[in-house]
Length: 599
Image (spheres, rainbow, N blue to C red):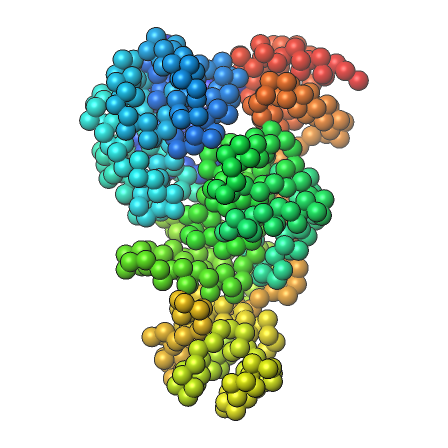
């Protein structure tokens, strides 16, 4: 029986484990249960793939990612690992072939969607073979507090009851301390070993910009910082995804939409193009991205405020999985806060409280004057982080100012409209009153007769909108659910009486700083290696197209950079390159050497 390190070298082509991996793998190989919290790109998959290859039997992987199972299996097959999947997308003959291979012990890994375990025939099938381990991927889906809750995950505790001697490993990249506890309880892993890696992704530059025509801001961001790079743009609505994809395409950016309103073949095509093509941008709702294993996503952008820090962290974590510098960019503004405050008031009391907690944490991240990474890590229970130097607030710290008087002016306007006129209005009307603008609407309602009319000329309209946004974020203002009008909260009274100082963030009018040099630098190449690297990329692209797999399934960029730099002259030398395992050496070695020999 191979040791885990021998499997790592022979199959995956790496000489050493990443931090935390070896202890997790040895725990599962020895038959122990494990709960693993590790960030995207930290190497979670190896934590169950290697034990499945070392232990007797088949590793059964429970995954919600039906649309990606084929790509995951293709990647394993390229390594010489015998992998298969069972889900609703297969034809009966294909399903029977995979089932027969499982029973005969001819698979190393079998991927299943969680809902398949509801089917008695699936349970009977598993009992006919020898299970090496159960891996529960995306384990946060079991948490009712989480952003990706899936009811089918609740039944996975049955695995311990039906297969008490088979080790289980649950893995997720997204879990607060509360979510961690819920995963442990619901999956019956309280007695398992828990491994919590740092959630820090030092290669990601976090930046949040004040929203002002987000489509143009996005286009400028892509053109100046990520031309021809692959990336994901997230928005909340299907119509926004369609419009932004069209806008980018019209302005020379290769972009496609992805959302639940598209038919299944179109979604599959757009996902396949994203995985297989260089430089494609997908504009998506949150329906896209979980489990995407594309390593060279250079940016994730949000043009709408995410609903929770968990969602934001997981979505931004899809950038830079290869450890190279990447950007998490967001445009955030007043209407985001108004819309989310309204949404947080819907549903029953439990739902409203939960949504309010999620939103408050997300708004705090957006409005902070301190390091964004420190706030992110603190949210996930890492309270000892130091300022990172690789986010916008570290590179260009915003000013904090005493906004108590400005807050009193807005709150007084809302109060007078309510008490004197029995009226409620949105932010636009409040700002017009403060600036003394005699608009048709102001004159229609005689708002120019209010004592607060024109008392706010010291600030501009965008600045007043920034004040209103921050008062909403701090809970000093709220919105009326039906129409989005501003209303006071219990906390407003202390501000009006001068008993509560309001500190506000001054929105930066200057252009945000470009991403600083990442702590995780690209593999350096001498100038003469660059054309060799490009030849290797062309060879890889043609090979991937011929085999119908994503390019990264052949080799990652980091591996090609090392090949271009070291210029191995033989298969033996090529086999010493990181990421070149035995199967890939046999399958692609001659092609690589021929490409290197070409002028």
